[in-house]
Length: 406
Length: 139
Image (cartoon, rainbow over all chains, first blue to last red; front, top):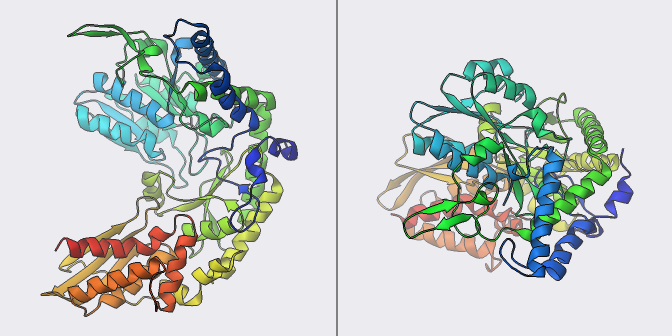
């Protein structure tokens, strides 16, 4: 286990209390992670000492700002172990990254008769953009059914792929159930079929070491705020040859090569996809967040998540009237459950009074909820600052919940 | 825990949430009103039969938390037999209770009003009332 007390000291939010005077037990890390001092200082330092628009100013400060931004791109490239810097595009987050591909790639490459396959466990961010791209292009939108426990079935995947399937959209880790999909194997299956793969990496980026060259996926998206970085910045990775032929999702300043009265040409990637002033300070602070994660080590972080997940799973299993969803095998630090006859929001309100922050509802995965035949769950999701004691507090608060709602 | 939590989830609200009174589908109803909260997925259908401007029969069905279910149950029981003017007055009274402005709110209304003390929960209390108000406004 990581030294949690040492880590918590690096996060100022843990010195706060809720309206009931309780210290924060933050178990909603799949929604967003808390921010360490180094990231907050990085943001502040950028605005105090580097603030200038990038890629255009011919003066010292603009040059330094541009270098800081591009240096952060380099950190992301190293973090994801990608080959080419221009394969890393800064954007607002996972949602925008996927929209960039669904619109930019989808509008050019999808035609009537083509198919897009998404899994039933996708977050709406990797579901709706494809649904819309299919509506616009006339392509067929197909949803891959899951096993009864909500996990992916590779045999079903093989059967669902047809000669017309142009794109497979799949999450690396389910944000609701925590199950980890074998992306490398999935990509092989898809590529053997001539199908490209868009991976939603929102939950995997802060859980395990990534090597996108090994995974061989064609597109990969993540958000900075899920890995201790600021909200409002994220990354789209795309294979160089795909990005080179992809249309920009937005047009404007910074991304143009030459603008004529009737015709405009665009820059090469990544700048083609970064129209307007990007979130420079946030991108720089994201680089700092990745340094922070590297300092702890993703192998230790993954181990920490798994130990907490296993402990919580065991304790929840032996707690009366708790129904767990999904499976503890091949899953990350995310657990969904329900308490018998008590709505998830009522559970979350009572846990919230105890200072325990959890997520309740459909978690932006309504197709998965339909598949499981439920309307929502309570979800706990762990990070580096959580410990066993907080799991115990969760269990105690669930017992209290039953008493209050009896 | 703050006393507001127990005051919110008090017996009268929990009993109301568990009550089956008026909890029935009415697929043949003259009017079927959807009350849906996209944030949490809670969803009720309100089934209404109007006799000119009077609520002749009302029932509801669907899924929601204790607060939204209790609130919907209260709405359905309260509008039974009332004409539209009386329904509008009832909605105004409900709004006053929710904002703490009513001089004599009943126990159940007081409990529902406490939802505003808890993040994101007031919407649960007003969900079906808002849908019903929108329906009346559209008549």
